[in-house]
Length: 113
Image (cartoon, rainbow, N blue to C red; front, side, top):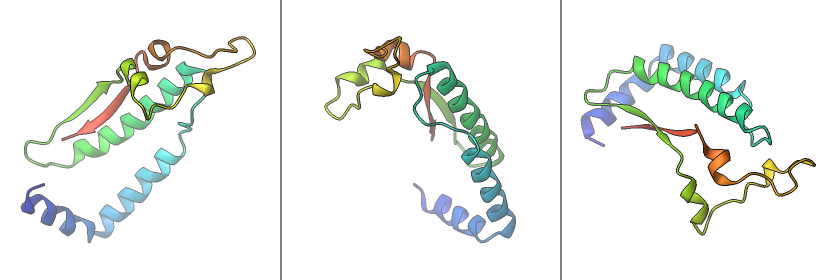
């Protein structure tokens, strides 16, 4: 990260207004239940709601050349050695749970560059 950007962030962090805005943002984010849940549509909505808040806040910052991106989750992540199984998708009706393609469909990670 360029030194001028780091210094700008340090300067902004000394602002009471920024501290209050950050606290407000965190409270709004904490009000959204993003825990793993068998209802994947519920998780999609919760993640999207959290990303909407973060994107609005990031858009208020004006770092030259900065951009944000919602990058789709690649179901191939299931092949990674550190992958966590989707046990949270198991229900009495679905004792084996859901496959990664179903769980990660229409879900994304939020990246900020």
